[in-house]
Length: 139
Image (cartoon, rainbow, N blue to C red; front, side, top):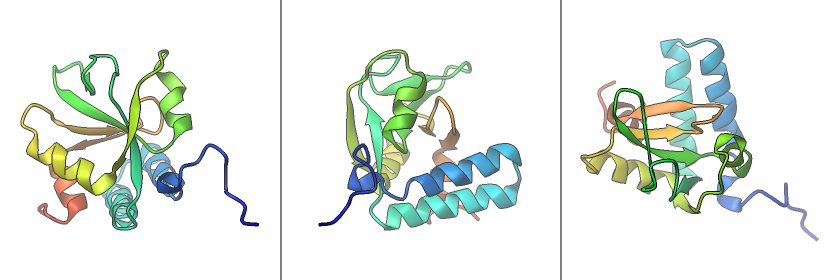
């Protein structure tokens, strides 16, 4: 009988802890090298068909979060623990393929990008960082 890693871990989320670890290292030492490492980890998870949990009804009510500068961002979570960490309210969510989410984010004019784990191990990926992760950006 095969044992699952965790009862709370969807198959598409397994491996996302590597993203959280890379973001934590980047938060502790924000260097270009660690940013490049974090984007590489994201690209590898995307190539492995990794998924995010995407909120449908976050604070603004339309799948976006507004930053202090007025920008709209999509929210994505590496796991259920990150999603539940700081919202204070239950959100409707769905699972989304990382690559599809990133390609959509680049094509939607009204948003600035994707905030991965907005409550804790946070990475704000503007469209340039998303394009780099997709292999389309300026290196």
